[in-house]
Length: 542
Image (cartoon, rainbow, N blue to C red):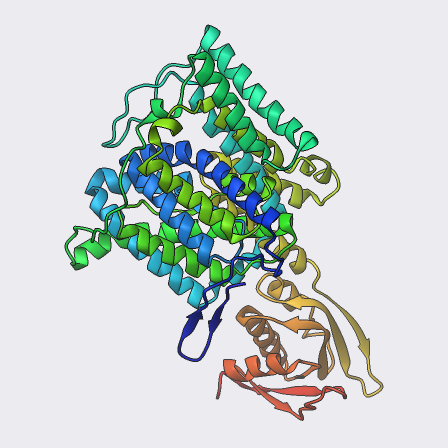
């Protein structure tokens, strides 16, 4: 498995082998499965890349080149074999404003900078922060994305209209009706039935590929009049040419592209890392988050210099690959190479494939992606977790994947903080010497600091008060301020307060803050109780 290792000065990107992260053997059977799975993914990538190019307001080849280059580079260097990357709708909706206002050359420059930002994030190992995404957010993400994939397929049930490459057109038209609609629905249903039944007959050929092939043959042989890939746009083209973005290298240019680059980099990494987690769970193999960040960044940097619109991981195509048996890097590499082959020599054939077959494949992806058990789970989990699942699902559909995940994480964090804030309380007792001991229960942080202050009664307490933190933890600056506030109240009453059983890092926090002078006799092995007494007459460093 490829890893990005952060040393003292450099990060080393190792060239991976073609096997699974677990080191599974590359048997002839697995290679054949990966190649066929890659072909299936490539066929599904064509209409997706064209559609997302229309969304971004660029030529279809800009989307196809991005799907090829991003898919190839991430397949070789990515952190999770079996993942598929390419041009995505989540990025396209952000790009459209940039293209409309400044032109496609600024888009290429933005994609290059986006890639550099992602490489930096990988070097800094920021990918590990994806671990902070709670499980309810993941469920909402998966469900929302399944709905988004489903809704995206509905546009294929329109009569193909004129395409405006310059910006705001793209495969529009009236909804199908009558016989064309019924024919389209019948072919979609046939494709889905083949995908469902094929594994029961044989697993030698991926079921989605069989569905596409059989339906395409029926449509071509019998001349059935249904929308085809070629009705969206021609995919014929040459090799992607090397091209330095034609933008002035000025501060003004940086001001234009930097905000878009940061947003695109964040969206791309969030979607890629969540997809990495999902594929890892399905395959039972762990992925490398930091390695994936670097691979995504490298792919986008290169793509920007070859006339591509950039991209990130594609959960729909990744699910097709995994469900088709694709497990190694060969699958992703083959998907990219097949896509390039379609562009160069096979466009007349690929353009004859009926969209109904590809819609059927994506509908099966929707069924397989949606977490149907979440309906059962939501009746058993805490109300807040159920709310987060629904919230992330709705925001994913209405807004954006990255926005939904960020909203879900924030809501989950606030709920966690609120629940922990309610846990702060204290037990008290008197010592034989007459001192009062407060045994603090629960974490002391910004959410519980006010409740902590309210636990004490400086006027009624004796001359010596001990605050025991054996069952608590001082977490942040708000906690330090709360301790200082309590100490100040006892100082005003001419009384002494002692802090007991503070951990070593809490002790360092207190010393670093400079608000309290702590006398301590540290026990470095923590085998004995440690008392920290605070001379409340020395506050604020006086």
